Length: 474
Length: 97
Image (cartoon, rainbow over all chains, first blue to last red; front, side):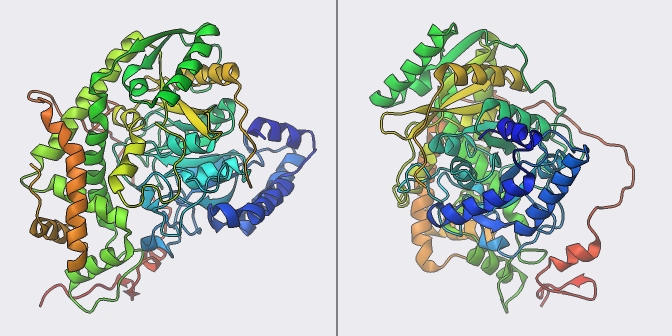
């Protein structure tokens, strides 16, 4: 069910927030054993919030546009008094002392947080297999990963736990799991939603965004979370987000992405573009020649920023600590050696190397220069086109364990999503059907702060393609 | 560019304050080599004269009024987060010999 449908039922008295929250928890009871998405349940907190919501509705004192709607959040979001792990043993017993702005804004509109859900540790990964608490599974095929890093969010939503989820996207971590699980995932313009209270990964790339069943829901949740926040100096004022009558004028298909697909996927996407053309879209090919450098650029900048951001986990101020009898430096090293997982250490080492004397110019500076070239490609493309289209991922969800022996293989799953983060532009993934029955994603990109245009195009595509996915397996 | 040995990785691990066993250094060196191989394709692009980008929305010098505000979190609550604390202070290991 969509948010708007549930709101109508609440309005008509056909259900209550308490019922919705109870149903969400019984859904968790029924399916979590199979898909392993929940890290922390918030039973008491959610039921209290639901009772308060029902009371407000009865007294005609609704808080706002999400009154009584249960949702889940990736475990990257701090919630005052609630365990927040980022799926790392480093934060295994960390209880957040304040609440993220994104969560506070949703709760201020009446939304009810029911659970913190699984992800790759510190959001480093694309399958949830790097979670310190074990992988989640794709509810559409339990042998497959749900994607990541916001895999718990996508899998929970697809499995009917809550009516939307919020995740973070540094290089595709909302759009890729959305594509793999057959839901909508939105990466907004960099800075549109405050990062205050969100565990940091790569600060020049990290964004917060929603996962939903419809574009109307996605636009609503984005609109609520958006806006300048004094607590995040990189946040920007929110413009028009919910589309009215915008219509995408000129639409470009990113040639480099389509050409890199296998033949089955390529013909599948060409069919999608054909359908959109038939519906009246003016579509042409566009080339972004520097896209081939986006992934290497991303895998230098991101680990570099990670190595810096994760310095804070020192075993002293908060989080886990190793019982070390040695000096301070030995305590740092043993704490970080003991409580960080493999992929986190890989990225810290890569980043430290790229930033170290002697390699800085060849790696970090070089990657920042390539970022300029990738940004310029997008700028050029958006001077000609309102919307750019491409696949979200090269393939459908891979099998659990398929990429576990080769960390670089896992990086390649991000190849079509990282560029939007480097350029700071908004991008949405909407589901399409594939030949093997698993969903894929159509990626719809727009210029910075052109969220209304992006959602308008996505809404039309949603309508034209009217995708019906097979029922989930759980 | 891709000359990576175990001593370099051990040195980088020391800089990063991450303990890695001698046994793991070999594996880590291999992995870092693979990752550098993936990103080394950057080197074929001539970027001379290209300005580096680290901020994409054009923000510059973000200011706010210099007004004192109370932190929403009490010092006591923050202190409780520390694995070891005593008498209002965080306890750390020995720094000086």
